[in-house]
Length: 461
Ligand code: 9MR
Image (cartoon, rainbow, N blue to C red; front, side, top):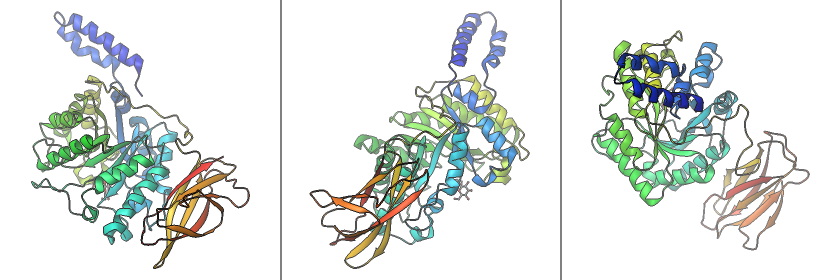
């Protein structure tokens, strides 16, 4: 994405302009256009940043929409398709069809993906809304683990936890079923996400956190500072940045972004939209871009949709393209602000190749645990083995926690380590699977009072 030629040209131009400045100011005003990126992604790339949008899978067949999205943006967020209700509609039954449509489109077009969102009080599937306590905590952690594992190697940044703080002046956590499982639910989610996908950047994402003097901003800042001091794995903070007349762009936005960045995290503008029109809207967009460009660790900006008519609040015409796909004044002001430059992101976002790379870190199969029947003294578990690419065979380990014991198995051949807690399962028969093919085995655990789910792995040959 970073274009070294452009950056060199820009430096040379800068030196040239500097030399002329005292005598020929008018010339300096005209020159920067010479190095300008002509799309949002190209212009942002000059300073090592990305420019993204939210995509709805159902709109990808609209060619006006997909043409603009492909041309202008190089970071893609699924607007709804990777949320908890979409990816785990029934407990333990994961559904990636819609999320995969977006991830595959992005990767086929050389774009990165922001994952949104692993744990959130909203858009929970019905089964989860009715849960509480340890069962909910475990279900949430399993969700984080399974979804982040499934997408491992394909996600630039994950919104691990979304919108966990209350609005208003309290500075408190938002009350929710997840919060009621214990205050440590957020850090537990981050730890699970890191274990599942060590290469994705892990973000906390929220709205109404733009104004530095707001209690909610301070509360999130204090949490991030605490996480950094205790080694909780957090890499970035997402600022949703949904603005309108009741919630205007704050004049201290740059302060907010730079103070968070000083904690040692990247900051990203993740869901930008600004209701309004004309030059007033354009100026506010410009202010946001300038605030980001002034902070080296503000690594990218994502707008929440392509055209005004695609927006979750379409009547506020908050985006950069009108309903016909024409560039608005806001588009031009964003492009110009990006081209005017600012600090350079020291770790520019790499562009993925057009084809899906082999999965990293775990061989080429994935094991997924799902809960089966439960009785007073025992429960069943099922492990689904999925071949990420064609494999000749697989081995899967299932680790139970003492005093649990596996007392029966089916659809595989087990062997045991000396502790009796680790079972290695190999297929009955050949084990060869085509890419994307799945196979399952099962077992019964006598729990002896410990209901913790087993952990599972898969390795392929
Ligand atoms: O844009 C999304 C809209 O299509 C959904 O109906 C809505 C449901 O909650 O979520 C919207 O996206 C939200 C995002 O996931 C989190 N931040 C606020 C966004 C706008 O509501």
